[in-house]
Amino acid sequence: MPLQKVSTLVGVAKQASAGTLAANPTYAHGLTGGAPISVEPSVSPVEVTVAKRAAYNIYRDDVVNGGEVQSLAYIRSLGLWLLGALGTDTVTGSTPYTHTYSTGDLPYLSLFTKGISTTNSGIRDCKVDELSLKWDGSKPVDLTVKLLGTVFSYPSTFTPTTDDTGAESYLTPLGGTFSLDVIGSTNVSARVVGGELTIKNNVTAIHPSATIEAGDVWEGVQEHSLKLTIVPDDLALFRSTVTGTVNGTSVATVQPTGSVNLVFKENNGSNTLTVTGSKIAYMTSFPDADPKGGAVEIELVGMAVMPSAGTAPLVYALTNAIASY
Image (tube, rainbow, N blue to C red; front, side, top):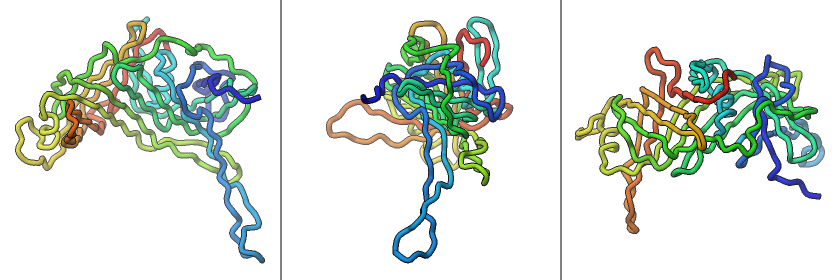
C-alpha cells in the first residue's frame, strides 16, 4: 500500500560530542513541507578509453547528507534551531527565560525523522547551514532550516523529550511591533506587510578519502540579512537609502547604515521573539508603476554586519519556559 506523506515528523537534539548520534530527539514537531532527511550520492562514469563510444564503469565518489526542515516557528523547539544557527545562547531571567543568541561556534545536532515509513531515519553531526523566518500579512511565521551532516543511519527509537506536534505555541506577527531607521538609530514604526530574516553559515562538508560520507562539517563566515515589504505613505525610505539623508538630492558615495527592531508574539501566550540590529545597510528600488493602480509597496533589503563591541549582526532574543538548550 502507498506511504502517507502527512504522518512525517522531524526531531532534533544537540549532541554531547561530534561523531555520536543522540539517542533520541530533544524536540520534535510537524512539518509544512521540505525533505527533512536528504541523502544524495554523487555518481560519475569512469573516464577511460574503451572499445565502444560509451562508459563501461561507474563509481560513487561521495554522499551528501543533510536535510531541509519547513515548519512553523514553535516557541520551544525554535530555541534549539536558533542556537544551531547562531552558536551561543546567553540565558537570563526565570520563567520566562530570555535566550539571547550571539555569533559563536555552531553545535553539532542530530537530525531525525519518523512517520513516512515504519523505520526512523537519522543523520549525525549536523550543522545549520541556513535558517530563515518568513511571514506574510498576519499569517504564522514560517521556519526553514537547512542542515548539512555526516553519517546517515536508521535509529531504533524516536522518543522526543518535548513534542511540539500539533502545538499552538508558535510565532506570529499579529500584535507585534515593526520599527526601523534606514540611515540612523531612531527607529520609527513602519507599515510592514511581510518579510524574511535569514542567517547563513556557509557550512561545507569535509570528505576524507577513506570514507564515502563526510567526516565532518564546518562553518564559514556568518551572514545576516532581512527583507521587509512596506506600504509607505511617501518615498522618504527610498530617498534616504539612495542619498543618505532625508532631504538628499544626489546619490550618496558612502553607504549609510540603519537599525531595526522587530517583535513577534506567541500565538496563544505571552512569549516573544525580538530581533534587533544597529548596523544595517539598507537597499531598495524605486516602486513599479501599475496601470491597475493600488497602494505602492517597497521592499527594503538589509545586509546586517557586526557593530563595534557587538555580539551578532542581528540579535535574536527569545522568551519561553525552557531553562537551557
